[in-house]
Structures are given as C-alpha cells and as structure tokens.
Amino acid sequence: MALPKRRHSHSRTRLRRSHDALDKLQIGKCPECGEPRMPHQLCSGCGKYKGKQIVYFQEEQ
Image 1: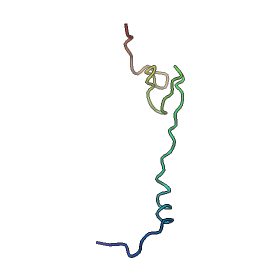
Image 2: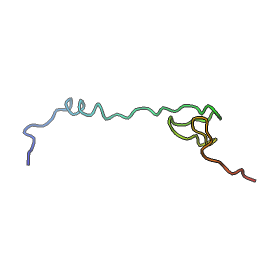
Image 3: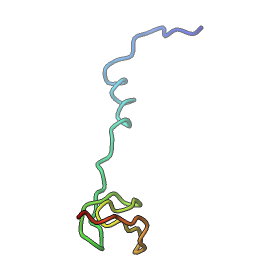
Image 4: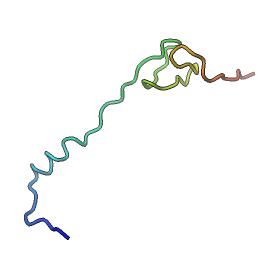
C-alpha cells in the first residue's frame, strides 16, 4: 500500500479544499402565493408547480 513520503503543507491542503465550499441556497418566491421556495420544487404554501396544481390541501375547519 502506498504511503506519502512527505507531509503536505497547509497551503497545499487548503488549495485542495478550496472546492469543498457549499454554495448559497437559491431561494425564490412562488409566483402564485409569494411564499419562499427552492427552484424546481413544489411550493409548500399553495401546492403548485409551474402553474399546475399538484397537491390539494384540505381546509381546516
């Protein structure tokens, strides 16, 4: 099994890890009800996706 001959420096380690950062969440507004939602996801407020009603919520009495 291969082993490293020399220790990696801090700069080499940090350069390698520079691609591991997470991107910010792209949160937009639902065009129907205005609630925040993720792109390409169903709106949890109104149950619509691309203008079509996908989920029907029961009204509370």
